[in-house]
Length: 284
Ligand SMILES: N[C@@H](CCC[C@H](N)C(=O)O)C(=O)O
Image (cartoon, rainbow, N blue to C red; front, top):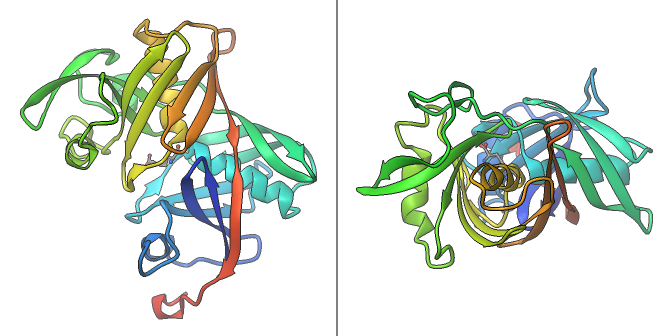
């Protein structure tokens, strides 16, 4: 299987061009290639496929083999791959995902994509659609008990579920302990991605993320969008201004446009290397 290793501010995936390659069992391939000791090493697997409704389709899998409906860092890399490897030859493109078609604008430097702006769509706040168990229609600054301690969280879906928790000491957090407990909490029937956030000023926040199916990653694009929306809803940052979200792997610029209710994410996309791997033992 030919592949390309790419990352969006350190959130790395193995990308496969399914215009040319066939992957029979993506879950098994994701688990194998993601392994940082016995595989290629990544947060998961992303297949770039032909689409009838967009320029291409993104089909993404987490490190544990589970399928994700949306990936913010991944979709910027899909756009870079599509342009740099000649699937498209225009700078405004569309990508189909399991959470709908997304529209992207590409910035070109030296003939290759360097930055991508993505219309990530409208945030979903309705509890039943996220999904999160609640008697209220929306979950904003609500209490939740995890590992015997009460936290307050806000729930937002950006096509995938996020729980946002504010705290002062994000750097000192034992995320390996608390992350899995949020992920598998009974109140999140589809599991959840959890962002632990410190507010720096009225337009800047810092976050660490525990991703559903992949554990702690250096960045999460959908998570950064959910954090910006949550921070506006909680009155912690200014509305109608871009929010800089500082993640372990770098910064993302997020703008929730009140006029059309769309969330716009801007950030880099990077190619690491091309490779080829024999997956015959998996039946591929
Ligand atoms: N890293 C991603 C999100 C990947 C999917 C997520 N773990 C899920 O299962 O919902 C991003 O950049 O958005």
